[in-house]
Amino acid sequence: MRITEIQTAVIEANYDWTIVKVLTDAGLSGWGEAFFAPGLTAVIREFNEFLPGEDPRDVDRLCRLMRTALGATGTAGMGYHAISGVEAALWDIVGKSTNLPVYQFLGGKYRDRVRIYADCHAGKGLASLSSVLVPRTPSW
Image 1 (tube, helix red, strand yellow):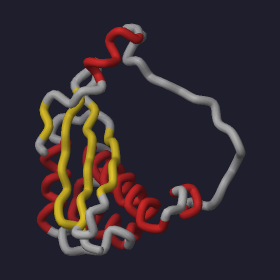
Image 2: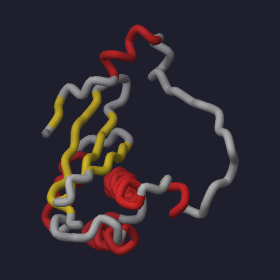
Image 3: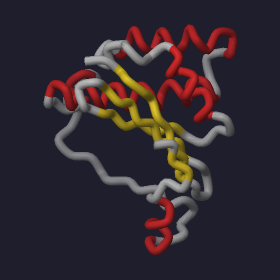
């Protein structure tokens, strides 16, 4: 299985949320999310220069490649937001390709139940959620 492309879309709300989609030649795709940062989609698209052709299941090595590509930009900020979105999408592919929950690869099950949490962007209410959930500037 090989990565064929990395795509992004921005969901506009109180903050812009960047959605990352990693596609593979096996027909699997993984989804990730990265927090707002102007120019974030451009950074993620730059990863298309070297990630296609790589095995998406080799998550640690691909994260090292992305960190190296960032060069002297430091160990925080926009570059690491970009990496986190792609990394989440890679783990999604790992889970789908093995038919196992991703937590199995991240140290195992910690508890049987978790409380649900939803961020409605400053409490605008449920009526506003439909507009938040539709990407307004997709690139795919």
